[in-house]
Image (tube, rainbow, N blue to C red; front, side, top):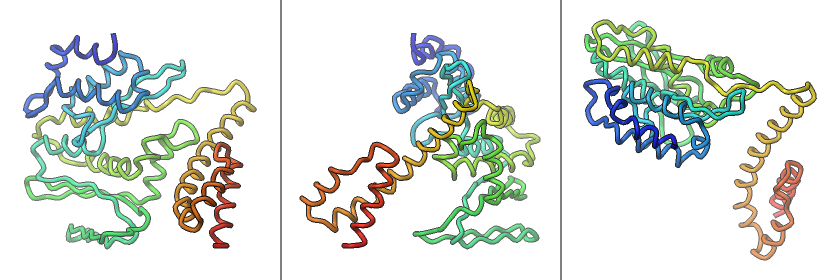
Length: 302
């Protein structure tokens, strides 16, 4: 039938799951967003229809968008032990922001990344936070913080240093490698991490939609990452690790080649540049390493 067709078939029942009091959240929009997710990520076309429908259902139950400029949650494909692709619903920090504001208990909530060149100061006695940064090179990430302003005037604050973030990321791994979400969206995942820690301590008594907020945190805490398939032998496992490491190295070296090429092109005549680059082997790790060394030698002699 197809995952999107399955959603269309049950559209009437899914519509009833939308939490009350959320304006401009329509079931047709969510199904359209689900279709856009598949078009954007071809791996989602391979997941089981049931897992995809369940992930979208969770988004509807929380009233969160899953695609577009106001995206608040993600549909993440993963491979289970049986070799089947399934779909996981994963709230993002934008979704947690919105869920906190829906309680009606808070005037504002923020989560920010702090870089080494930022001006950052916290006065715990006064309850003030100063965070200023200029445009340009902000340096490396050194931490994150989140802050919420209650309607009664009270403020709540939580922070995490980079070492804490990295430890949290390491604890969520199933294998030896960083998950795609952390690898591609480190800052966003760090912001979500400190938000979850803050939300745990926020007063929620008397608020609206508290059930959705708690459910979002529960879902995000589920250990539902890609399963690690046990190798048939130790040697096979080692070979698998080597191949994964080489793939990551290839990606890094390819990025370095990409950065070097414009400089190389400027330093050579067009014909010489074409002849030089035609001889480069960029299909293997050893070939890429040799190409980088060769390009650097040319640039040094130029």
